[in-house]
Length: 79
Image (cartoon, rainbow, N blue to C red; front, side, top):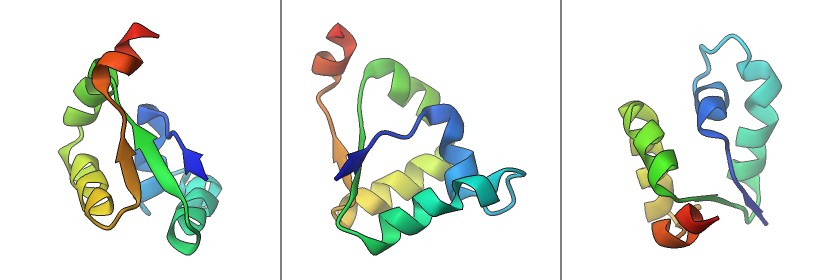
């Protein structure tokens, strides 16, 4: 199963210090415990993500472990 995490929600999912992390923690637990993947792509998404390098590096590490799938930017941008 795959999930797309809105770029604005990424800190809430991955940062334990975020004020609303407890509400988003189940997503992180779900990602860590199951055969799930985060799916992301698109020029605008990556542009926004580049403004948060600490979270981009988390996604890069997750991609190395097979937990992230990057979708072709051109395909996403067309939609």
